[in-house]
Image (tube, rainbow, N blue to C red; front, side, top):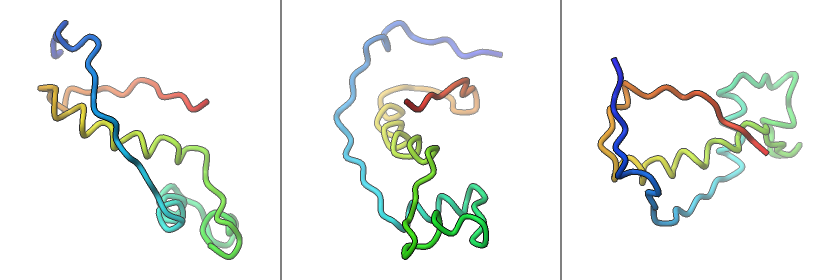
Length: 87
């Protein structure tokens, strides 16, 4: 079972998307992915940082998906996320 990709989508442009986050967002993300306060205090306590986990970099990009999905007819159940790279 596959979903065809329309050739009309090649070069699809979106409007710019403003993204922001707070220390609270960074700390909640760290807790959500398993940071333990007794072992990774710098990631979850504002008085010690907070440090930001490198994988947090993919989170702001998720906001862009909303603007893309508004323009594309796509069944999310058919989506396979194959790779993402942080550089």
